[in-house]
Length: 265
DNA sequence: GGAATTTGACCTGA
DNA sequence: TCAGGTCAAATTCC
Image (tube, rainbow, N blue to C red):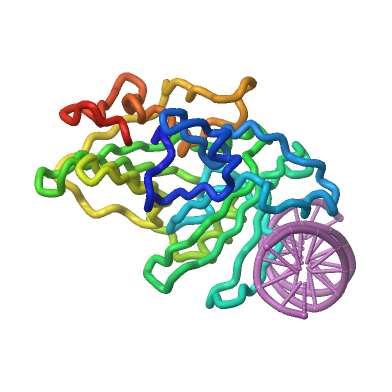
């Protein structure tokens, strides 16, 4: 996912400045914890509330709002008018330690099972922490009947980057953990020119074929800011390379093969 | 006892 | 004026 998602994507950039900082459609997509390169403002209480609309933010829809490769600390909860579900407020756990102003709002959107959450991220991570477990990346190539789609599943071992306490809390918040969860699925459908990113709390349905490989040796994603910015998360690893190809160690995948002349992935 | 969460109050922006 | 975002004391959990 190297370019901003098309209309209807799972990510919506609410702040025009964030989009501008991201560059044109061909530029690297800036992920949560990404590379906006926007310096956080002074963190005094007054300043922190000033000009909310100017803060870089982007929206993600996910089934697992708490698993995004970073540690978050809840600092508030608010019932929102015209919304059945309360809005939960989180900030980076390293806010004090590393002056990381990254924060996110989590709001459940429906009663589905699993429920869908809208997560609004604000500011990129400046903590440079990479609490990423060694992911078990599974590319699930499509059965012909399902169209030209690619599924990539991230089976995180989880425990490596968060303590048991938080794991327990997150399980409690959502639902009992399935073995190996969380997992993330990326779906690229070159026919519809749409792609979705979702994270699932449970296993994906079986597919016709699959192959497994590790992300070990995956080159660091190109950063649009000098100095590297945020840690190299599981999420980042995929998004960066996709404009050209997905590259996992010795393996590479060309999503546009057979679909020449269209790089709108 | 330390750290995280809860929750009511306060403040800002629309 | 009010809804939303944040603070901070109180509470809970390990």
